[in-house]
Image (cartoon, rainbow, N blue to C red; front, side):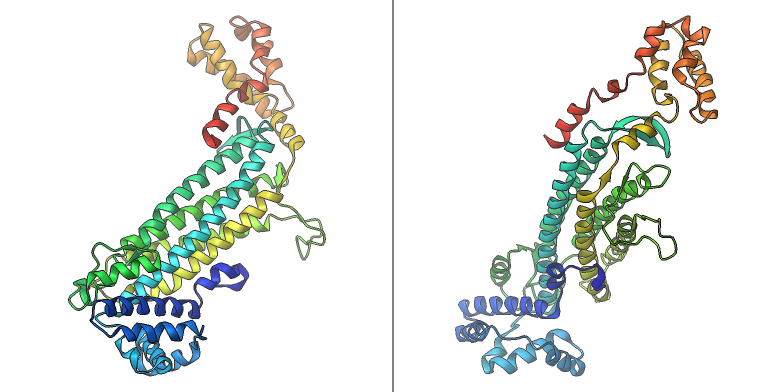
Length: 436
């Protein structure tokens, strides 16, 4: 985790003290249920909770010092708690294995992280929706292969992003439910030394579902799915960021990131206004996606378990969620403050002498009885003249001067095909589909 790209609330989920607090709650809830079952004295859980009620500081350094000797993090934690609580603490961890604590804790952390990410997406959706409505009918050029295609509106570009992040939200909700499972099933997952009701009790207290069947670990296909969804969200962040970056290019300049007073774009060139935020988001998206493949590879553990997944998850759990949280918040700020230039959009739309209307003329010719092949030839030969003139010539005027074209279409019919508003007849329909 790099502090430059981290926000405190998400980072707090992954702090050692926060982790140890979850460990304690799992152990204490399990001990409480074991006491109700008569497996351990009920006084054991009381002693644990009484100590917890004092809001003790978790001494991370002391636990680390014990681990340096034991070479086992869960044992180090249990040893430290026993030193604080006293003799009753010996009943902690009865019938449990380390993965019961570690995997259930990771589920809690990822569940909490997902909740924050869902809030982040909600904020982003609100920002995108506002800009979509603002520019619902702002004409701009649509591009395919980076080349002028046909007119769209800037609001439609925003609507596309809204729909995409709505899908991201749905996927994350599903992934959150799938990852939020509890396993307190003991060594190799058979419940040989602990009753399944303990697992059910801990799951309820920690806000998790019961893992239907665990080995010694929660199956890692759940985690693979979770991190894959984070990767898809990161890709959607990059997609919108790349759009902004392209629109901010000097020769395009239809929109650009907000440039604050006192901001500097280059150490060498004072005139520069660079799309640094969206370039940064492209990079952060790569970091989040880098967690996906290791998560996939973690699925194939040996038999009932090995720990090849453990070191991986110590990295990707914090790094992917913290980075994505930051990226979503940054993208929200970009969208909220994005500078949009409708006049430049119109200028670019008009730049190529009306080429954007070529399809309408093509269709009109075919409807007038001209074969599609001939219609395409007639429109293209005039369009290429406009293209090669860099928009100095007018497609409309060339078509009206083309005898083969006017043999099929009247001047009025040709002119009607150059109506910009025609392309926006279904904008309301699309908005209704997206925003409902």
